[in-house]
Length: 197
Ligand code: MN3
Image (cartoon, rainbow, N blue to C red):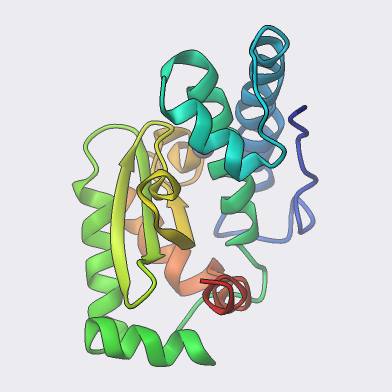
């Protein structure tokens, strides 16, 4: 099992002005790359029978430590890039729109809960929209943790580590979270994840 840094699913400048090429140079080119490089170093000495990244995340989460931190961050970032789109943002359509209305009452209520989740994650981490198999929920995770290990199916995520937003938004995490939902969120990817949840 070897980790591979995925190409971004959009041009580096495509998300400007909401997420700059400079942010992506650091976030994808430096931070994510470092998790992949370190994860592969540690995997070389690890005994694993996992044959998918999801299995490897679940397996390494049982012991935690540096291997899990790098594997988890690789999984979370790979998922996050797919949650971004130059033509994204705004209220959803398709099945995800219906499920959000059922679970939260309205898109505006979902939006408020998602932003509150991201703000409520003290320090570094992630805010997620997940499916528990029946309904949708907001989940938070610290550092490299992921709701995958709690049996949830990830539908969407936003990275709330400072490295995700500091160059574009400085300390304004709520503005970054609003901008993610208003300008970037890829509902097509959310609909794909919902279909397999
Ligand atoms: Mn990050």
